[in-house]
Image (cartoon, rainbow, N blue to C red; front, side):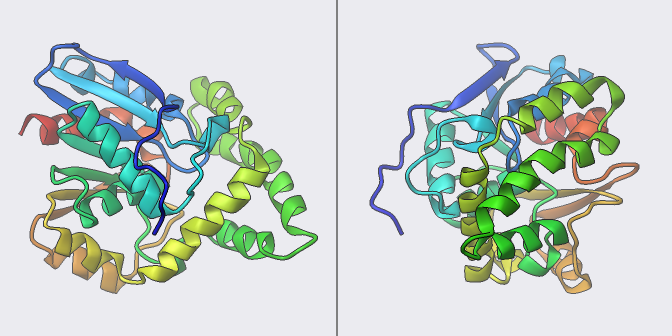
Length: 267
């Protein structure tokens, strides 16, 4: 899809765990989020005490980081695949848009190991309605820029109620680093990707990669009955529901998610 190089030299990376660990896990945050959204997961006992090296990497351009020239999901998957190979990662964990990047890594043959998908989207109709409306308005000349400027300012206030009290200030500050113009463009590319692949359940199934699809029990992102049935019937795909969690499942229930990631990483 693009002629841009499939490498990127401006990743924002945070690592933890033994440097000589035999198992490495790449953590990809969600859209407009940074590695800080994985801090609680990385510090949770099931992973903090495991012989696993954790490599969290903000998707380039998100949370104020340097963006690549090509904002397509396929290019993000290629860049993340190159990073996973460079760092010797055995497992990829992605959240939200980061989960879809991980899905595309598997579907495109860019990564063959296990993937843990935290609240992915399997079709455009499943996406959060506010994000879908912002994407539609963002394409309208004259109001698109204003829409995204307002959304980036408003979202941290909406997020507060979903975040643990001790993490609210730090995580909303990370979100406020986002550039509205970048967000407008990258979300457009994201919805274009969902239009190109209207059946991502089959795309994940056909990849052959072992996959865990993890969702909070009151996630804002939907999952249709047909999609759920397709995931449950797919060999190699395990569907996990996390109680008392919404879309930010690894922030709201870090110990539960960390235990799953540790189990996948250590086999």
